[in-house]
Length: 326
Image (cartoon, rainbow, N blue to C red; front, side, top):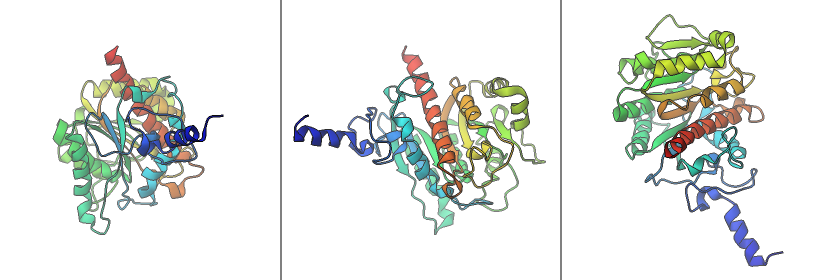
């Protein structure tokens, strides 16, 4: 046995790395059932210097049209990520944080008693991160948050191609200023999206309006498989700068019951992960993952799926940076 001092020092090191880790990229083993639940045990920090990617939450769900609760999504996704932080990443086989400096920036502050302030608060939050040269991985919240996020990204990068995994097109005519089913029509009208290089994947709801974004509906995926679907995605986006938005209801409700507007007939979790793992060649400028509603979840099925999708996106970003160094 070591002496008592050694044991005490070890406990100081092995618990709560989210704020005790000195090196942002370093990680160490921690009890999966304890400690501060930052995303993937990344260091909580507001310091953006030399940071590649900042994870943050936007806990907003006042734009939902059915079941609420996704304001609790960021917290649940973080909590479900702890197991993913304990080993080298599958199937990549490496520690992504040796190649990509990632922090957990915390959540965007929102005054829900002043709904007219919400869009600007999200936009300002995003601009603070993006203008530092840091990319964003954002957890919702409902899908409306993509609109102010896209405004911030388009201001920085110019119009971006949109890669949308979703069961809904979200290009219906607005019924009011805050609506989680209309923001991509608004984004098209505002010129935030490079329509000719944008694509929606997994849709299984109908809209008469065609805004020019290519659609891979869920029946195409079921009939033709992931590889052909990925080929269409890569061909559409090409070498443009791309923003990825992932609505968890892209998954079938059997695999993501904890969401506000579930639609039957979707894909399985493994299929969603294979999509993400196939996108390493895309020039991503940012990502959001939205609509995780923990009150309607069971045994963390939905939040675990969300955490793994986000984890694998980080891995392809890290793998791309790692490959450039080889």
